Length: 603
Image (cartoon, rainbow, N blue to C red; front, side, top):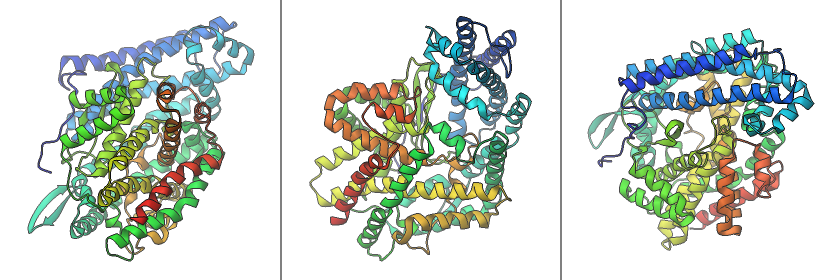
């Protein structure tokens, strides 16, 4: 694309990394951490520490910690994300990378603080009547009762204070360092690509965007060049993945977790029954997705679909959309849902919250990050002008809207699980897709719209399921020994064959999906995959409720987003009459996708 795409503006947060304001922000982080440390010490808060004799005193001790920790988290998340904004868009900036490392080192103290409080809270919760009475009293403890109850429960899975502190300190030179290395290697990877007799050196993120190119030869060559590029760096990336998964597995065992999935389920606030109900429905839907892949292959004149054609445009989708066209279109669709959402989206565009340009040193993918100190968000994207790019933008703006709905909540009240963090993003995607389908009468245009929806849905159901199987097997085998790069490729190909089946050409899969997906390398969040499927299916189910209730749904929906950090997924879903613990709900949402598959196959 030749048009100039926006870079985000963070000048209202800090003027720059060298500014006096930023330096004061770093100093303030130290002071806020000192305040929490002093409070914990003065009140003897720690594992086995004394529990106040009255409910009022107990509520007061917990409340003082909550106020100090909330203030520190509000500041530290803003400070860190400000630096991360530079690192993620320019990994060559050594100053930003050093500052990020410095902030992470400082925040090890907050991990220790949370360990001390969680251990003390577990002891306090043992005095059940006093603990429950304290949570019933007006004040911070009552306002954070869900958080406190959850932390007390999680105190069962703690090592000793000394071990937890050591684990936090070692993470910077261990799992966190492996994660950072993967990000640097992936973001700085460049390839030589020949197109129309011209050879260009492209960042890997720009090359990956060619998967949407209307020219099959371009897509095929981009796939082959990409695989060869990952081949060059596979050994350091295999070391990174082994380092992360090895550290996580060791800590899970020392903390008494049942398996590698246990902590993830607790983080996502669901149980095994719910996960298996969803995964079972997903497994049963795979034949429908394979029909979609085979039909797409036939539209492209092939018997089987190779990996490089997964994102190939079909229908009238070869024409790229300009940034202005996308902005106008997205805002129009947001307005069809609610004026509030449209006004929010307009603010994000007008105030340059979005970094859209793919470029050297910028990481791949897309994400949204909050800046709580200014009650704003920033959206990271690698825009390519395709319908898929439109969906991605709407998706990330959904995350930003979710953050907006939680404005005024404390940081500990905002800690929503990934399962519910996808709610607003999937709702936005559904709004945009349904609006496009409703106004389209041209079969070729409708085919392109359905394709944009189905390529995303297939990634979130089929590919996400393959990622779940991959990660599950990697954890199982990593407990016994390190996996070589060849091992990791073999596990990835096995997972893809199990999910894509005969929908794809088995001779042309992608053995290096493990190398570039940053989700696998996050030590504090394993199985960063199935929550996306949960989000898609939960969002589709909520959209059905919206269709039934109309405008009456909107305040309930906003309240759900606002309180998504203060309840289990099952309890929050039950407000809408949704039972996520059994298969019927998941099957109902998947039927929406299957109906679109049938519509696609009929065109």
